Length: 187
Image (cartoon, rainbow, N blue to C red; front, side):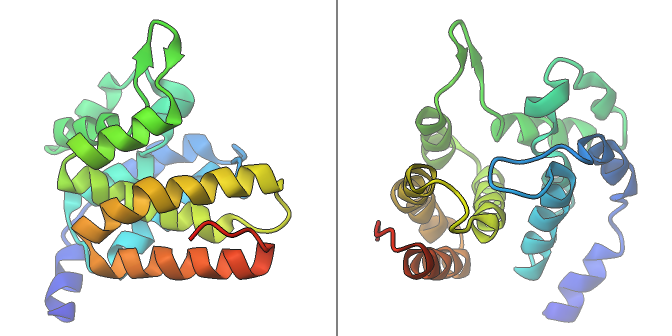
């Protein structure tokens, strides 16, 4: 199974999508590191779980792009390849929606994906959270760590449990290690 899944990877032309993601180079993240590396890390987490779906992998390398810079100019992504429209739809599914009062709240956003999102959107959000949690450390304010871990426990872990039991286990393990290293208890 592994070889067959990895063989599928050789048929995915991801380079044009990575090129678009380079717009995130040097853009810092709340949880540390930069956005461009995070996009790649999210994709590699999916590949590590043998989730070799071309639309999902392409979306993973640009999943934060619209929210960060190009929310309005997504049209250029539609013509990258034959899956452009599906990729853009998936990225919008995991992008915070704009409302009259600004962006939807983080809880509304995460619960929307958990309750209404497609399986691909939920897998992408779980891989995204694994990347984010592995970058989180005791250098951050306890208030931020506690909020992030609580979101992960209350929203992300139940989502992961439904879409991929191994992702669920990894998130749970990361959370337990964070509790030990930070002294912050949420599980």
